[in-house]
Amino acid sequence: PPPFTGVWMGDSKLCAIGVHCGSHITSHGLALNCCTDLTWFDHIVPCGLEGKGVTSLSHELGQHVAVNHVLEPFLDSFQEVFECTLVSSEDPG
Image (cartoon, rainbow, N blue to C red):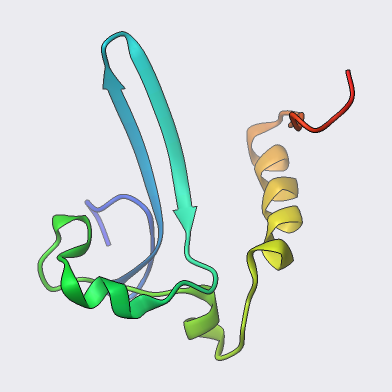
């Protein structure tokens, strides 16, 4: 829910998105919870947001969703949305 960043399912964050700038270096990334053990989040205030929770694809869909199951469709969508071509460090050349 605005103004919070990430992907939300109601009051629970499904995907965190972040950018860090410091010492002339910018880093960015995301964390999509696929089959995360959500009990670890019981011990912290996730993202410093009181009253908000964390969820996963597995929890929301009621079945195990492995990272390798969503990786290819995610990367395909990323390329389409950002009109780019992703190159893996494992690709020759």
